[in-house]
Length: 284
Image (tube, rainbow, N blue to C red; front, side):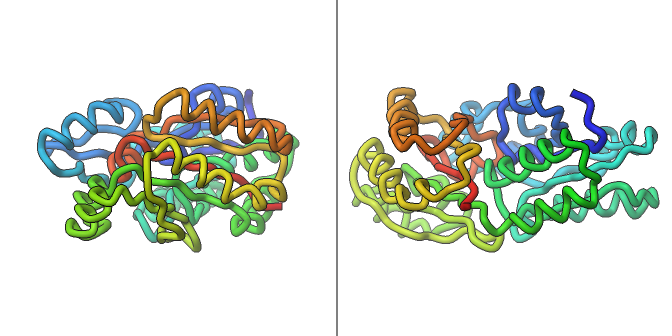
């Protein structure tokens, strides 16, 4: 699909290959660094390989923003063609990715490259990217799309439950003692993204399968009043039966036109670890 306006996002948007192809979305990968070797997220390494390395080395990989060179190599043909480009990046409170895209626009004096700070991560970005792609397919201008996306940005509801605190602790996102106690007590935090930053909303206890369903049920009122166009189930490697149970629950609500299931990419997975699952949607 050739859009009048090109929609580009960084790899942390966690959209499936099918959705990227359907809506003509271009991806620029962030970087994952292991043993001083840098890999492009989604191109050179898989989440399962990251988990294996992390467990063997008792640490998490370092992650870094898109590189200027890689981003420019992807954007240059669009710029040479004089196309309008809208780029979505992971929250600026978490990465300098948006600034690198702005730097490219400034260095090449290209005023048609519009940069949106998603103020989110994973499919909290993906929801905005899909919305922009749909608006582009309707023929709206880049300026109109940016205005509509930013006006609606605060309605994104992004949360997930983490099975183990080990990976967050390894990455310095919670104290190791807290992780030890949390894993011993089988505590599972619900992480929410608000105003571009992550915080803990609730703490669950028990087996992940029961926790995930309780988390989904706790969202029911918000889900019943959500934008009905779509909802995402995004996970970092969960049992298929559990993902299917969550999907069946969302289907029974009879709210959403599309229920998308997608696997988180390397950057998100390296920080949250396996077994994490989130339900992400737009509030109405």
